[in-house]
Image (cartoon, rainbow, N blue to C red):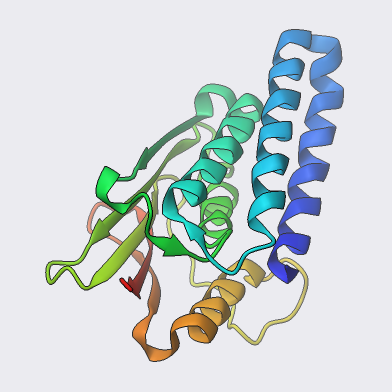
Length: 195
């Protein structure tokens, strides 16, 4: 709930500012943005009342969020969600991936004039006992995040919350890493047990 209370005001403020501009410039785009905002809020409010929800719901929230951001960023944002059918019902914490996608956009894509791409995927590990969730983005190169103990507003709050939630729900059975891959893209990788 704390994570949601931090993410939503920031996203809502940016969306409302963009809506105000779009109303005068492009009313059709403003209406599309408002529709996406409604879809996103409906999905996140339902998910905020549960400890876990199906992975397909998590990806649905991400789809609503990315479509909303795409109205604002236009062709500067390319995105892809890859969720195999066999993983749709796997339970995951609500809003687990959104802070990672938001960080990818804010720190990877928005600083770049051309924008970039975000890909979110789900896979099982080779042994079939764990779920690998990955958020990968192009754009600005990875900068070492602030330490987890840095409590100043806007300083890695989402990443710290992801780590805390994983530790609380899965203990040492979950891992989270933020790395630059060999192609220069930033990858946020979460591994949790399949139960």
